[in-house]
Image 1: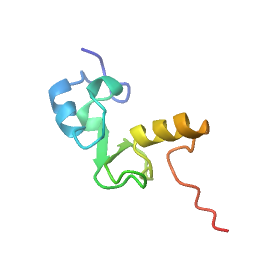
Image 2: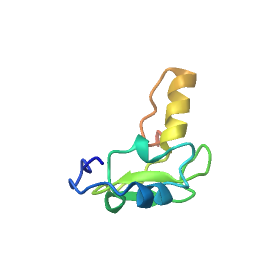
Image 3: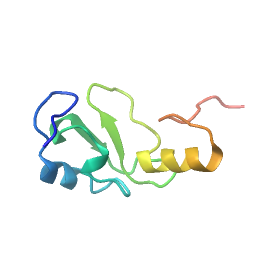
Length: 89
């Protein structure tokens, strides 16, 4: 069992797996945090409409879930970051 990199608590994989169900293709093995330090926001990804993970202490909700961000990097070779470019033309 690994400690949470945020608070150092032992990660309860069962609880975190249940909390991560809304994140496409991700499991507890993709995170190094406990369920108390993970915040999941449903229906927030601008690409797929699935949930996004918000690190504890962050005030801004990401626009991309980790899976869509990874897909965009693989497809375009460019990392869009966690948030869409808000500059309008």
